[in-house]
Length: 76
Image (cartoon, rainbow, N blue to C red; front, side):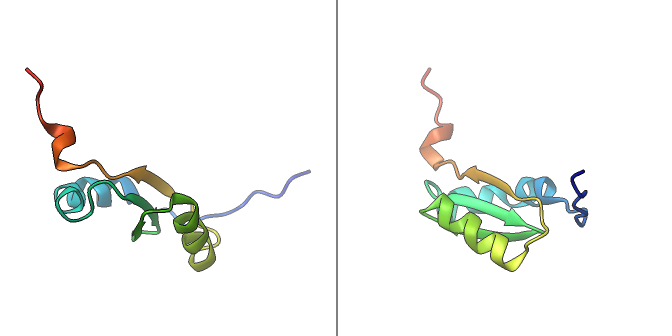
């Protein structure tokens, strides 16, 4: 039987919602991984996951590409 992994409850999606505007302005085009409300930002998503798991081994990670400002430009 598999052991159930216990994790701390985090609110990473809320962190993204509160910080998305600054993320787009400063880091558009990069990747974001969050572990227990700690952001890891860079160009290599796999490396960010590795760093986040090393620092927070029991965390459930949230990851996403950070949109660029031009990704929000309307084409109409």
